Image 1 (cartoon, rainbow, N blue to C red):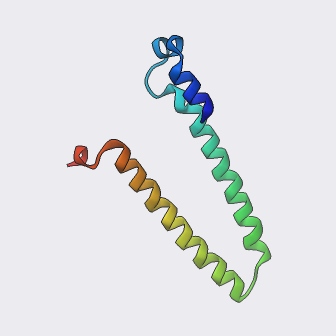
Image 2 (tube, one colour):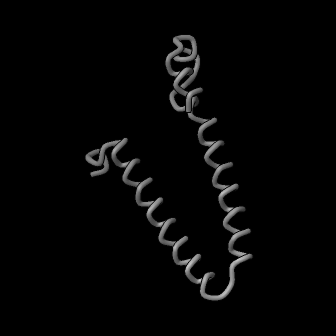
Length: 85
């Protein structure tokens, strides 16, 4: 995130880069983080069994739903909900 801030403050890059290009490294980092989280999820899911496995999966589904809802709320706040209607 700090690299995007530095790119945004530099006049040289503001003239040469198109809108949105400074955020590409952030997107790549988030994809990598999602892959690492998925791998960790799989390792834990394989190792738990029985009642703990059911609890693990339900808790994971709830957590994923909360994260999706928070991301949607943040995105709507960033673009302004009025522009959608």
